[in-house]
Image (cartoon, rainbow, N blue to C red; front, side, top):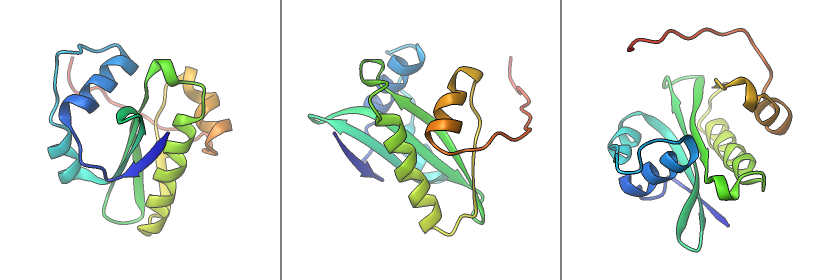
Length: 132
């Protein structure tokens, strides 16, 4: 496995990975390259034999706050350190850009990964669903 920062994004490849990781529609292709170019501080891909097996992006406010989003690892490659390495590299990139804080939201079943595995600490937060 090798990691690439700000790799040339193939919308089909990232969409397919997300569909495998999160159970989405594998036929739906989202405009990842355009979104990342416009909103992301950076992104990191994990590749194995030319195949995208993991992905994470870091968005930011242009100042001291960065946000970890869309962490995804192919289900066949989970629990092998791929996600941890992606988050480590994304964290280093945010730090190098001068960010002071890296935020992440996660579901309860991912608490062990983010808190114990990646070094985040739990904080109170809120979320508001805008669309049904």
